[in-house]
Length: 438
RNA sequence: GGGGAGAUACCCUAGCGGUCAAAGGGAGCAGACUGUAAAUCUGCCGGCUAUGCCUUCGGAGGUUCAAAUCCUCCUCUCCCCA
Image (cartoon, rainbow, N blue to C red):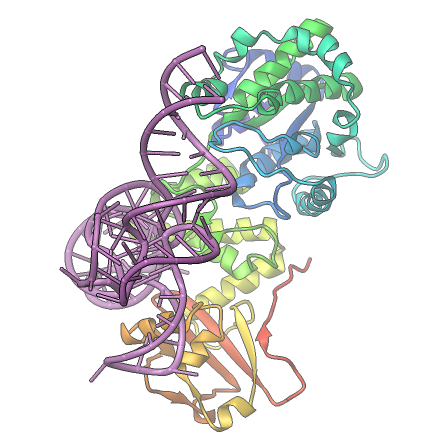
């Protein structure tokens, strides 16, 4: 391991993971962590069947701590999701079934395994623990809960909380079950403290109030000091939410966002974000990152390439990262003859080209555009290319255009798509899905 | 429970009988410039078998030659009072 710094917290701090921390500058936590290995937890939202780039901050934070020997607990909010966290939401969230949550949770666990070690047995001293809080929330008895837990929450304190105050002030309405969210999350912390001696909860900065509520609950019921830590809520330099692009969310699931697209997302990082992202989303040592910080102008692209490669390697695999990198180099750095297999691909039968296929139809059948009107517009505006040549609206593409049974389409400056032509008439047409391979 | 306001394209928002596929802004796309960055400027921005046709203005009906605009009912949202 590259680690030179002993103090884990210092690592998180210097890499930009810490927004707020209990105990001033985190002295309490520092003390706790220096004495012994601690158990800490983060909750993930199981509302989607995949995590996305926005979840990478907590994931990396968990990984850093685990690499230092601490024991992570990941919980998915199977119980709390059924209520919906009002934090920062203007509307109530859709209520999901346990089934959906279970399924999503399973997929999320698989993704987390790339970053965090979860041992089923005692194969590791600090293997991660994966839990669904439905386990203890679903069977709660209302009266008992009110008596044992509810009594510790003062409504006048709660409504001072930013989360609730906004909702109350705007008179948008805050339903009683949403108001209870904080109690449940605090209760999670208490349960984890009791069962696993979990002493630290981490989360996005919007979770600060909920985390403090949990800390209070443990103090009041168990007379023990536990800690909390929040991550900054990241936006890109342009003010976009992390992981959201024009074309949608950047998922960790390779079926939803291919490794190539994933790589492209990162290599297109804004200049101003590169160093910050290297620190947060890769395990590169800080002194190396400091070196990259010296790059200016066009050279910053080198740092972006490293960022894209490293992050893709973590999320998918070294092989996928290499393929994505090579394909990108062929397309953008004009390294000819390289491997283009990572580029989004559509397979079509040779038959289609015998009589020729109109460029509108050709583009329409790829994921480059979604309607024929868009295809027409793209071509008319001069943004469509086949094999690097600008095309016109009436063009018909025939076998003559094929180069080794491949057509390379381009939309705009940087959206590539290849069409592979097959002789086999039995093979169905369609997009090829990319799967991450270890 | 009483009173009021509203639901318009991806989002915000105008339109309030024909000239409305629907102003403006944002987002997005394309072009120029560049470094697969940012900023800036220009064009596009419902769909299609495309100088025309089709479907849109919460839902269902109705009035009219003509409805996003008027009427009726329904659904939902917000505000004020209790």
